[in-house]
Length: 324
Ligand SMILES: NC(=O)c1ccc[n+]([C@@H]2O[C@H](COP(=O)([O-])OP(=O)(O)OC[C@H]3O[C@@H](n4cnc5c(N)ncnc54)[C@H](OP(=O)(O)O)[C@@H]3O)[C@@H](O)[C@H]2O)c1
Image 1 (cartoon, protein in one colour):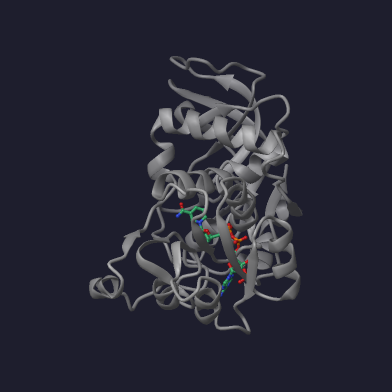
Image 2 (cartoon, rainbow, N blue to C red; image 1 turned 135 degrees about the vertical axis):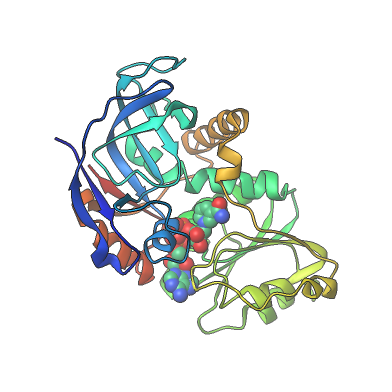
């Protein structure tokens, strides 16, 4: 029988434990997927540690990105069949050998997109897709600041932004991570653990600031991210890996008549036409060489707590997956 890694309440990585899966018969509109690989994301940490609301009573199976093979199809499902290789992103339920899922979130994988690659990009790559095409449409010549540039989202963003012709400034913690980000498309990378990134961004942009700043670090960076942005520029706050930024006032935006957005991927993927178009764009980018995805950490599904500790300990680069 299949199993999953779940938590009964928020806490440290020790709350993750193994549970046996029950009945896995898909209902109308659902499919049963046997996972080959599952992606690890910082979102999983926010949910596990209680930073985001706990969505169920009792055991919650975490994990929001996966890929595998369809083993059963419920009634009223169109375009998917037993044996199809598929991927998806949907909040929670992925840390499992098998899962039943609403077919509305499931996309077929091209033959040249293997499951481990799909499990690394369905959440992180689609996030980059909406960040650079929808939240702000990056144009050739735009100056861009992107924090945590050596992370899972960051390494994908660096390469995709370069292909769009942007002038990119990344930040990362430590010399090795900075070198990695530079090798993945970023024009300049600032070690924000020992350098004032705002001063450096101003130096690199002749005192103007960037057209668009992407901040997923939150507490430690957000105040200076705002002031690293050009007058009438755009700030996209999309995460809080260092903790929530609690000091924001609307009048902060009046310092530069800035535009600010706080988007979440799940408000995009719920739109099936967006999901199909963005997935096609992403699959093309990873198969035509625009984006080279670095899967730099692999853990067995049962060892998911070790994967969490590596991510919270800033010990990972690029993507991390669980193999099933
Ligand atoms: N809103 C959305 O739709 C959406 C979707 C996907 C991801 N995200 C966000 O995007 C960010 C990146 O996600 P990811 O899964 O690819 O993670 P990741 O970037 O691989 O890992 C997070 C990175 O944040 C940096 N960081 C800075 N301060 C930290 C701290 N106090 N503790 C831990 N890490 C810290 C670390 O890089 P350095 O050591 O280089 O600083 C770390 O490697 C996360 O904030 C995530 O929540 C948002």
